[in-house]
Amino acid sequence: MGTPPPRGRVPGGRRADAALAARALVLALALYSCFLLGNWAFHQLVGLLVNILLAFFLALAIEPAVGRMAARGMRRGLATFLVFLAVLVFGVGFVVLLGSMLAGQIVDMVENFPKYLDSLIKWINDSFHTDLSRVEVQDSLLKSDWLQRYVQNSASGVLDVSATVLGGLFRLLTIFLFSFCFAADGPRLRRALCSVLPPARQAEVCGRGRSRSTRPAAICIRAA
Image 1 (spheres, rainbow, N blue to C red):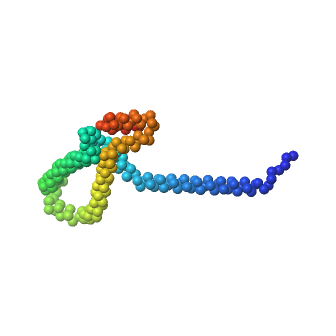
Image 2 (image 1 turned 60 degrees about the vertical axis):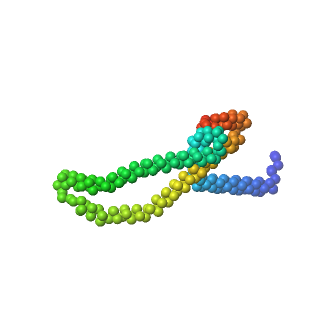
Image 3 (image 1 turned 30 degrees about the vertical axis):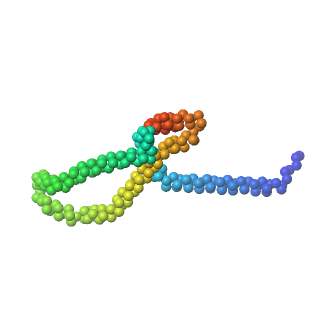
């Protein structure tokens, strides 16, 4: 018969197993905490990440014009500023033109509203044999509870609309700022992106970026 194993090693083995289990538990809790922290940070920064992505695509859109102006000896910063100024002027002009047309339609509707109301009341009187008048309809509308509640809710919602407008303006400013940086430092950004590629691909991608700066979409496709 064989000799039994020494009894002194059993408690030591149990302590080692307990220490290993405690270490695994601490590691699992740490990984779970890191996951929760990363998930929270991602949801907090998702708006900023979307703005940066939009700014990157906007910089790609204006890169051909900036590249042509830079090829003629103009500094990239000044060329980017001029392109953005042209885009801003075009956008403001389009909004003003569209707003003037919309304002004209609203003014026409307000001026012709009594005629529309008279036509509607006449149709109701002829169809349902009633005896309504515009004055009675206006008084009932002005004294109605739902109109008063609507006015109160609209007055309280002015702050929400103002906050939404300010948030939209801040988002546009953020996009334009990142787009300006991406477009003005286009060659430096391409070199930084090329530095993470394998050496065999760096010469091809960076060479195409220098020789064909007017086609940034092709550069990005080749880099991918």
